[in-house]
Amino acid sequence: MTAPGSTPDDKLASLHEAGRRFVESIMAAWPEQSRADSAAITTALTTALSQDRARWESMQQQYYARHLELWQRLAQGETAPPADDGDRDRRFSAPEWRDLPYFDYLRQAYQLNARWLKDMAGALPLEDRLKKRLDFFTRQMIDAAAPANFAATNPEVIKLAAATNGESLRRGLELLREDVAKNRITMTDEAAFEIGRNIAVTPGDVVFENELMQLIQYRPATATVNALPLVMVPPCINKYYILDLQPDNSFARFAVANGHTVFMVSWRNMPPDQGRITWDQYLELGVIKALDVARAVCGVDQVNTLGFCVGGTLLAAALAVQHARGERPAASMTLLTTMLDFSDTGELSVFVDEDYVRQRERAYAEGGVMRGQELALTFASLRANDLIWNYVVNSYLKGRKPEAFDLLYWNSDSTNLPGAMYAYYVRNTYLENNLRVPGRLTMCGVPIDLGCVDVPAYLMASREDHIVPWHTAWQNTRLLGGEHCFVLAASGHIAGVINPASKNKRHFWIGASAAASADAWLDGAERHPGSWWTHWIEWLGARCDVSVAAPAAGGSAAYPVIEAAPGRYVRQRCDGPNM
Image 1 (cartoon, rainbow, N blue to C red):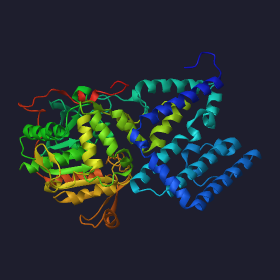
Image 2: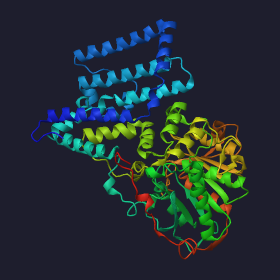
Image 3: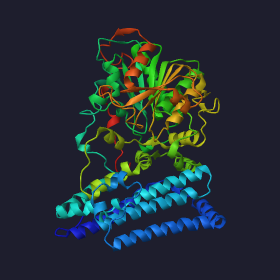
Image 4: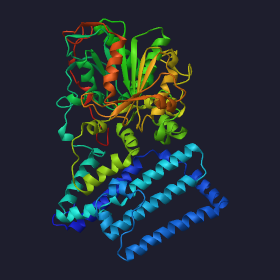
């Protein structure tokens, strides 16, 4: 923090230095294996230069010529014609980036350098895996180096500091100090939300708990309910309330309001002493136990099931285990933005290779947890301008607290995973893609085959999903054995799923079950306006149209109510450097 009485220039220099250190801390948090291929890239560059020197010299000459033109215009006090993408880049939307020659130069020089780096990376003769990695980290470097990200080279920051006599810089330093203490970037006004007060407020009760999860049974909102309850398995790398945000966008509340008895798995934020918990235990003590409890509480042989993202992967694997045992606990399965075939994992593939997995296996051989904040940073880096640098600029440089947004509050509330479970997961999915191969993996003592999971399946993907590419999610239609309905929603990984029917926004596609490829499916699909929620609730109701009286109370004699929802587990956070 700057001393009292310091000038705006002193505060600007202090903020610039603090920002630089924070940028370095972000970069240092990225996995080490992201830099492990530098020797191969250097060799490829040397080879390319020796084999086609004229091409590379031409690229360099064009680059120098354009920079010389920019310098000449700056010397003459002129602004240059806009770069190709300048008008569409929100980082440079303020008029000062074009009206003032110096900042116009910074903007266009940066865009020219960015194009040159992309062209250089794109021209290197590399195998696909290494090319994807180079392209990804080139973009990370380009995004981080934008002049808008630094106080001394952002005209909006300087103008605001002058207008507030340095107060904006003081507030920015304070926000930076708070985030350094949290060890993460604040993306929303966190004081606006409280679990159990205005998010995760659908009425219900915890009816079971163990060291892995609590199971919530929501209270009915209708006089009668579907005879088969619905068990939801959310992703275990974040809290369950992505499916139960505020009342107007709660997916769980929507299902309850449409006559379903809903059970929700609330995964525990794992402490370090639980680091040896395995993938098999997540199946047996997590998913399978949740299905057993829901069946026992409701007195039925089968339940409807739903899994979201990694929760869907866990659900499908658990059902494959139970089918291998001759058990059929599910009447239907809904998978939301879920990967079962990991042949194309998009940009997440740049983080996972043999060295990375071996590092994790060694690190977690004696226990320990995979910190949720590390995973959160990995996902944020896929959209760094939106999920990292946007907040660096607005919070730390301009001193503006983020606005309240429930999705971003949830996004910041990550959970730690047992190290043993995480290492097994990344090796057998992202690295080796073993889950899709019948009999290759033994889980809970039995060989599994996803093709034996022959229940009706509703398979939903999001078209702009950067975590689960929709083409990859479509491959689930080839792996599962039952009838299926594949639905493609507009928007991304989260916004595509959390699209309340009441708002009737966006659109979705429905196509024929049989198609030669994902693109062929889309070519023949029909676009429908509004939310896919309405289509799903009709599909689910058609799986069982028998109604029974709604339960008068949660739980049962064997599974009495432990506490009211949302329960204790969901309130445990992993902020700070020591979690």
